Length: 196
Image (cartoon, rainbow, N blue to C red; front, side, top):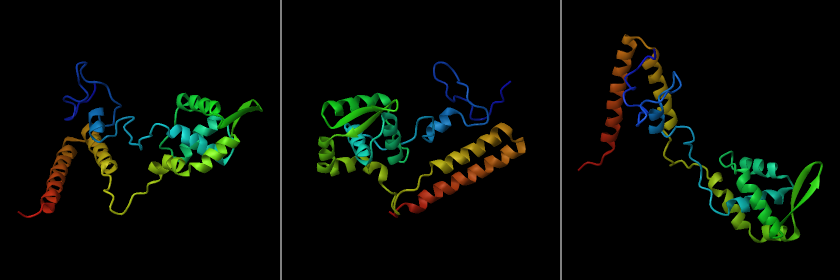
């Protein structure tokens, strides 16, 4: 029999009723509140044409095959953007049709290089190519709002452990700690309000 805690009522319900979750971790609705559900990571928005510019830019460094192009884009974006083969390979074909890229067979792999026209295009459009990477290169500034989600997630995980594994006494003490924390958080907001 699954042990139920105080958060179980209504979690992940919907028309199909409660959905199972991994024991020992907060239910999906809690993760969703924090934007931590699977696939909820925030990445800079990739604009139309960015795949094209990224391919030209990485090929300007050295010739490579399609797989290496995808890996290089992922590396240049710090892992935040890894375009799918379904977007990269058709774009490579388009660049070949435009005469900017050419592919040569060798060692069982198709090596892609910029043509003379491709090299010229890269040299004449540095701003366009740089704009592709800018969203991934922006460094947080000193006045950037801190991201509370990781800490909130850690607190939720600890609370969840108490809910699922703690004794009644530990759960009662945790409830007091959380009530005090809630009061302090609201106190922060009250202190920060301008006087009327």
